[in-house]
Image: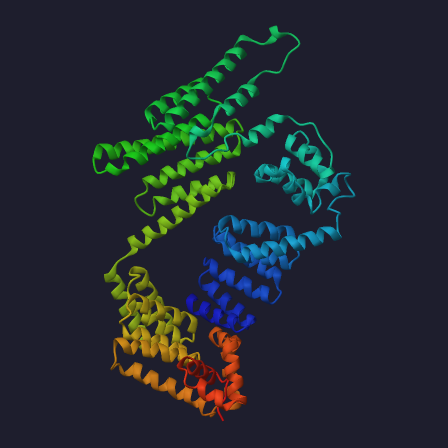
Length: 603
């Protein structure tokens, strides 16, 4: 079973046996080749052995299977860092932070990668192909950093086609000649060579156009109107008579369309949605080259759907809501299609896709209904990685998962699966038992008995961390269930955490004072604790217990406490003061913990 092999791999990794961990994770992967966690864990094990090429391959597989799991990018960044691919490491960590901006591990990894990249750049400035082309050196390893730090080129790095062109030039600088007509490439070349090239101002204006909120079409204001008027104004000709009447009419229609859009924005702010739709529709008729009219009208349809959903129990109104969402989707599809034809700003295309995805989530009734919405959000992120779109994607994924659990919920089947697990447990086929207990938990996540039984199976296989986790979940679901305490106490006793096991058994006795398993557990723990108090431990047992005790945060806190350090000193040098300390229950409780851990010995 993959779970069994994974548990063994985790245990080996925790013990520092990385080769064994790799072997177990490999076995688990063979059984469950689509489990991204297994590749992630094996990548970490390879990295621990400095086998970074293998770690990179597993990290890439992790990201391929689960592209929106931040830990995958942490593994990817660590592997690149180990291989001295500093720029790739920086990119990987940043990608992970886009998904989980508060992840401390990713922040720390990014800082290390950026520091290493800076040191590497200071040692070597030459790039590939610099001898074959006079501009080859400009496209060296530090190219991305320089472009990202310059305000005039920073926005271009978010455009996939631009990044692809630069990657092509970096591989072969002679390909620069193929892209010199692209104003963005010329601008980038000027930055890399510290030169000023004359480029059209149109591009800079378009990069910021329509960058307002995706849910507020009214924010595209009169400033945009003035820019549009300026953009469509024909360049001065030697003879004014050369401007055709058709071109003049086109310009006038564009100006009128912008006025209709402005009127639509004003109506939207007042929540006069029908009026807003009329104005946006008129703008679309006047000028079909501005996709913002379509995305704004789509936003209105979206808002109209939200406003009437509260009374959807009336069939005619429910039908109206669905129709409005469908109208929103149609406008978004048309905006995407038209935007691609006109090579519009990629942010505008991303906005249309995001609004389509939002409409699809509003219409979703089952987990399957969320799949097209998730696909659309993912497409939007490939156009422009917007935090709002990313949040909507994560919300859709969570909603889909919650609905899947609700749809899969079946207590009757859960009981049947638990009984099958019990039968395999009796036959000592623990991996098979775990399989059925896990299915029972999926069918009924509130079944505390399934967690208890799976904890027992994990314990039999020596997978103590998993067993402890299931036992604690069992107690959380039903604090009065005695078996949960016996399972947890047994795991802690096996891990030689006798003080913790004693506390667990005593907690269980509060709910069931006469439970024989709990009473036996208390007796066994007391025997082990007293064994240390009497000094009956063998040298090997004492050494093992001391090493384990020093890893316990509670023991570490006691030893670093200035008051307790003075107490221990008094026990050795000042018997009178020691007598006073013994009257303090709190102090004696801490002394007893140190004795049980083998740190303090009584002679």
